[in-house]
Image (cartoon, rainbow, N blue to C red; front, side, top):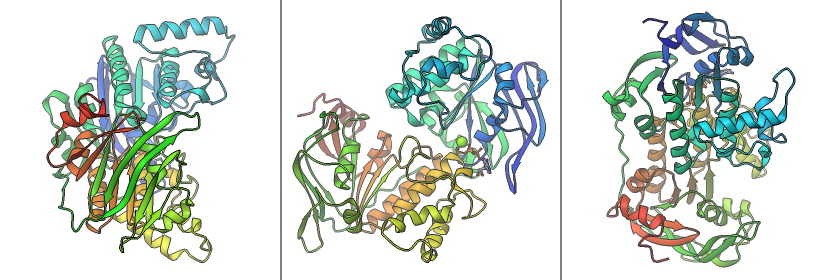
Length: 507
Ligand SMILES: Nc1ncnc2c1ncn2[C@@H]1O[C@H](COP(=O)(O)OP(=O)(O)OP(=O)(O)O)[C@@H](O)[C@H]1O
Ligand SMILES: [Mg+2]
């Protein structure tokens, strides 16, 4: 390979953390005017490899060439000086500062805020961003925060741009907007690397893909000349089937009955409007809807975390007796067997404690039930072992602090913990956010397993194709109202899509 043609050439890069080999003798070129998708399973070393370009880690071995010249990158400052900018999997912005203040944070010399804002506006115009330089970070949505991260990198003159799972936190509309911007940058001659687990994004955005497996570089190919199946096989190292089974419901009986449920948020805005439906045991009820149309409030209301203005939510026991869930203590609802597994956008921010190890994180659950933390270690240890095994969590052991795991492995722990708690009702939202494709299918299997065990599953997901494959019934929400309830086996994408935007819906 000719190192002069590439913006970046990595040669024989190795990086270890104790006994963990995160990258082993990796050779990779990143070219100008090209969008490269960096693929690999959770824990395969994608973030680590890119962190060596952005100055967060220093390689144990190997060489880095930038525009054909060997470079030593010891700090993020060195990286900026070489024109490399990275937008991280977990944002690194200071909440109380404004966009402009964050963008220039740590820069030396005299800073003229007026000039800075003008330059920010220039960058925004050039690439099609919308950023208010004076807005404080804590007032921003995730997608706005991400935009600030990208503008920050461009402000500092980056022409090699690395984005680590940027769309994990974006809605499909925001994703499209981001992709348009990235295409503009590519056409401007910038070298772009995107890490993503979503195959349709790889196919629609990237020019070339490069695959890592267990820290090693396996190969690259032109996106146009490959398929999702081939890329997945390369990532996993053997042929995998990307099929979701849909077993027939066994003896379904009403388990959760929601009637005329109306929920308002703290600002008094109606998030759920007169919603009625029944979820059966041994069935998967998929919830479809564009982001923010009430999915979260619905699951939270059932779990006792959301007060309602009106309506009832009954839990129906095996003997057909009914118990009202509204107004009940969430812990009591959990004890009835109702488990909520909601994967937040910031996966480390909720549900897991980064400095604690796997076992302790499993214990958070039993701890909430009032068991003694210091004597009751056996069960959580077993649960931790089971989650690691079933979901192939890549970790040196169950006593490794969670923050040392890769992003996707953190999440497998979180979801595994919830699903494994053997409930009668499983409320699950965004279960595969940030998971590699193989793990995603393992999660779908686990959810199906719960269904076969007779659990009533309410499944909120972002991927309409998956929803259509896994659900027995699909309830479509539009602006907080039920716009339709359709049969998952007979409906199609078009019908559900129209109901999501109310066209043809009766609401
Ligand atoms: N600071 C660290 N200390 C110890 N181990 C680490 C550290 N950072 C990463 N690792 C380990 O290195 C390996 C590669 O992790 P990395 O975060 O690069 O994976 P990834 O490909 O980005 O995965 P994901 O898709 O889940 O984000 C994993 O086994 C991870 O646990
Ligand atoms: Mg990562």
